Amino acid sequence: MNSGNSLLSEKDKIKIKNLISSRNLSEIIKILEKVKTSHANTAKTKDKRFVIREIVREIIDSGKDTGKDYFQTGLFFCRRKEDNAKEIGISLIWRGYKQNPGKVKEFLLKTADDQNWEVREYAGSAFADTLFYNREFYKDLIEWTKHPTENVRRAVVFSALGMRDEKNLNKAFRILRSLMNDRSIYVRKNLGPFILGSYFGNKFPEETTAFLHNCLNDRDLYVRWNVIMSFNNSFGKKYPGKAFEILKYFYDDENLVVIRAMRSTLKFLRRHHRKVTDEFIKKYYKDKFNLAELNL
Image 1: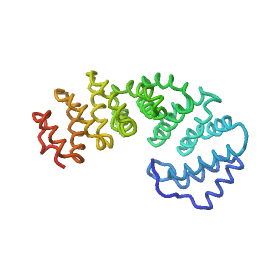
Image 2: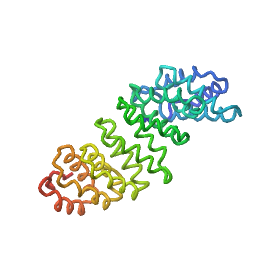
Image 3: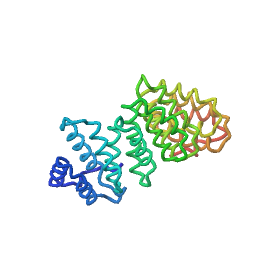
Image 4: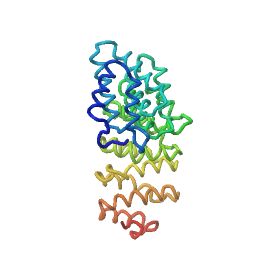
């Protein structure tokens, strides 16, 4: 998401607070539309978070039925055409999930498949937040791992973050395992290298390594790609021993997709752990790679 410094003036912020208090929500979007950038055709993330935070504060301070208020306010924004409104709306409506699960799920799906990549980013976060506070949402996510739209399946990958804790880790892994063989590049680049490696691997290195071990018998080339690419990030950098423990199982795989994943991951690991990576290559990959190919 685009971040950086705020483009809202202090005068704008005061006006927005007053508009929230008076529930003149349309005028808030007009202000944000004036400061949107070309990056994603939306306002700065910092400015949208300001609006979301102030609306949440107003709803909490009202002392009314917060769930109902979140739902209705989120619904107002979600129904608008502006991308700023969609992002604010999905960030609010999930908080009112219990008011109308069907309608909230409708907008989660719609936002996850939006044409604007940044709107889809907000949907991914909303998927995870919805799951964290509403465990019954899990069964829908398992179904959506087979959704025909790659954008929705990619949001489901992010939903696993809603169960990134010791108690629910196996359920989170079940979501990810269901998508390990996904053919979509958009899904894959967010699964193995990002969510599974950077997020789960760094927080739960032993459990994540065990999960990857359990995937080794799967001959599906995209499962294997995800396993390999799980170490092409800070997880591999921090735990090179665990990386090589898994990567040695792919030495005889002749598939080009797998070989390219190995080359990319070994190049990354060599940048941070040159000696042990060179030793690994000489032992398992001397016939496929030469060290010159991986020189930076």
